[in-house]
Length: 197
Image 1 (cartoon, rainbow, N blue to C red):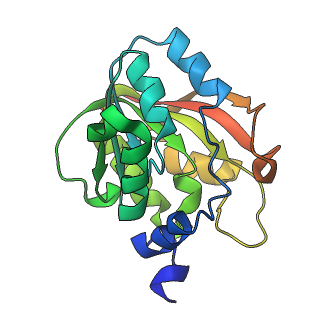
Image 2: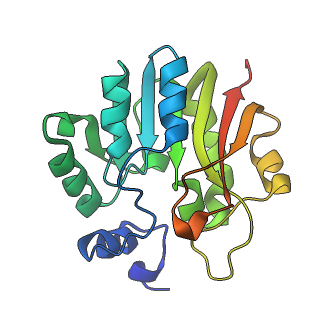
Image 3: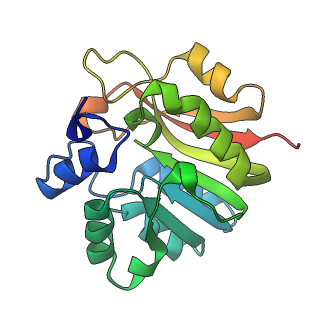
């Protein structure tokens, strides 16, 4: 498998961002996130796989201390350009090697998990547990269903329980009303609370 056909490699994403082949790009902030921000006290948030970083501005305006990372240099450059004065919130980094020991109140998910090959999903769940403070929440939009030619790689109910069920409690799951056409009927806003250790 070449580096440009392996979604676990930054080169895969560099090619897509550089050519603007980004059908997953919402070009804005989903209504479910705005609802969450309106009802949640601000804290410290991490946005892994942030892409062009629209959500960075939304969290910042709502009073959050925001850190966003992506391992695609092209995506990071585009996010910093798009975010103007908030570009300092976006770092080039690999979520799985993110070495700083910081505890976050919230980690925001949007098309990050489904972009990863499923063999990396257990490591994703491990990192979420490591980076969240006890009682912290993994929130965002998760893709469920079937996909004949992944990526994206959708979850199933069984796989979600395998990944999160022992360490997290599912607080909320609701259908997403403003999905992009390729995700219609497959997206759910979910809030997973990290259980006390």
